[in-house]
Amino acid sequence: MAAQVTKKTLIGEMLQMDMGIAAILMGAGMHCVGCPSSAMESLEEACMVHGMDADSVLKAINDYLAQQ
Image (cartoon, rainbow, N blue to C red; front, side, top):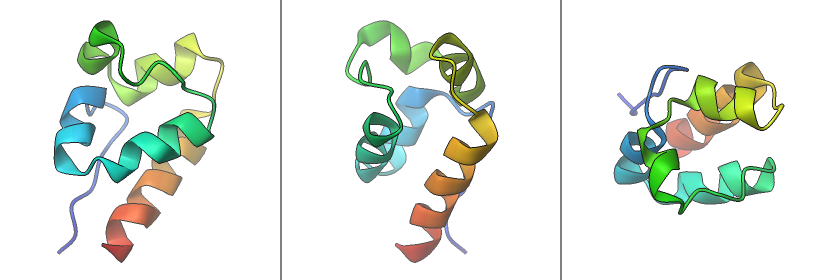
């Protein structure tokens, strides 16, 4: 079974799972992926700060992980 993330998964945890997720986050407009404070934010918190739809970003990440 492929790894999956939730809106509560920390950005740092996602990047430890698969660094390819960084490209998805940056492509969605979250360009601070390398910022130390972002590692401790959940996907939901980071999306809220950046005015992004957490559900669509979550789907893109889980679709990517399912293909790995």
